[in-house]
Amino acid sequence: MRLLDRKEVKILPGLFAERMRLNRSYLCELDTRCLLQNYYLEAGVIMDGIQVLNDPSAARLHWGWEAPTCQLRGHFLGHWLSAAAAIVANEQDEELAVRIRFVVSELKRLQQLNEEGGSTPGWVAPIPEKYMDILMTDRYIWSPQYTMHKLLMGLTHVALWLDSQEALDVLSGLADWYLAWTEKATKRAEKNGGNNAVFAGEQAGMLEIWAELYAGTKDERYRILAERYADNGLFEVLDRDGDPLTDNHTNASIPLAHGAARMYEVTGEERWKKRVMTFWKKAVTERGMYATTGNNSGEFWIPPMRQGAYLSETDQEFCTVYNMVRLAEYLYAWTGETAYADYIERALYNGFLAQQSRVSGMPTYFLPMLPGSRKKWGSKTRDFWCCFGTMVQAQTLYPELIYSLDEQNRTIHVAQYIPSEAGIRMPEGDTVKLRQTTGMKNYSNQAFFDERGGGALSRWALAFTAQTDSDKPVTLSFRVPSWCDGLPRVMIDGASCDEKEVRSMIKDGSLTLTRAFMGEEVAIYFPDSPVFEPLPDEPGMAAVRSGPVVLAGLTKKEVILSGKDAAQILRQRMTHTYSTFPWQQDHYRTAGQEENITFVPLYEVEDEAYTVYFPIV
Image (cartoon, rainbow, N blue to C red; front, top):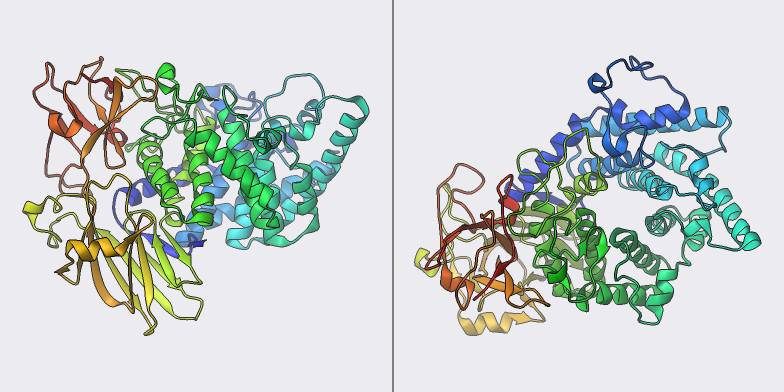
């Protein structure tokens, strides 16, 4: 099954489009000179006006993790390149395209200046070359390979998504540098004993990026580098079905699974696929998770089924949410199993949206789970935690998560319900145009379902229009979400399908229709209802979830909820607005409680105190 890429899908107005626009504005707001500041400093290039800083607070520089004093400085540029390249590929955004070309041309110039200044040929970086050699010693150094991976990743996406020869030229020089360095590091480890520096310093993403470059260019140098990064101790534990994750660094391990996934796609070797499947089992199936999909505390994996014991201010680092969605994306493409798409959907609402400020677009590093928590938003130029980078990439990922194509069976799978349209070229040469919108009643159209039926005021009343340019039949396959409360309701060109017809359409978690579509409108309503979702180790503590959306109680303290199920104690609240939709979505007020409180989607919480888990009586 092939996931449609960002060039084939356009996001239509709605919640996700709003967040994408917010993200693009931030990318454009950042000064390209500041994005390159540490690369200039390492190459000995003077930046105008800051040779001497009399007032550092007034200097237009990036601080926090991007400050010249931070050993991880310069990592954000790679994320910026990747996010900007994704937008250009999706929207042909010329403003960002111009800025990308400037950054890449500067990197090529700095690469030459470094060589003239005595660096090993090919080296271009925001950190000293010696940082990589320190990895071969017992001295502590903060993850230079992490920083270098981000640069390689950004350049790779520019090269492959935007057909940039200049980006490939810079990557070619870096590949030569890495061939020499990895050979030196391996020989040193063989001679002196100890660990091979190739696997030091949070290098996990390297395997995927070298495999990606080999797949895109067939350059043997990238295949050799992938092989040099392939022998990781985590894989040895997975091969014997062990648990390599508990209490280990979460975001240092997930990218290794990405690498295994890309190696499987490049080599076809089943051992790589098995490792990815086992990783998912150890990370999700056997470990459990918070209702939000998070599964780490303080950047480390929580022991299996112990989420309640680790409720804290530092749960759910955003980088882990982003990277687990990317892993689920690989698995969904291989298997077509809707459980992976269900996981992605929940992570989008309770991670991608919940950890991005709907006002400023800034991320929160963690998502606190304690009663009376508050989100801590980053600033635009003074923090640049790792989650800044994954957040700007996350908000460009939506187009590639929605649709996939099974070419052999002429089946288009709809995995995510996000307003969008796609132009899909079929193997036989014909084209299918597919448009998806929400059926929420607004000022310019009619509700799809009778208002008394409960579907008219729901984000899960969906409308699809399909148009083929041939008479060949096509199958549309719609994921039936695991949270769907009862049988979906289906209408085709205004005619309702009866219960028997709908049941006959559903198989293996999907609802399918096969015909030569000539512009018919298919309306589907997935009913949902608020439910309690308890913690695995504390069943008396539960979150409230409506569909995939986790609801936050607006309270500064722990409040006991009394009731058998969430639907019994919650009363929906509607308020007409002038935003994307004309009323609030998933807003509730408790009833019959000792202290009644308001519940809203966790992704709407900005600066309010909130609580996710409640004692249930």
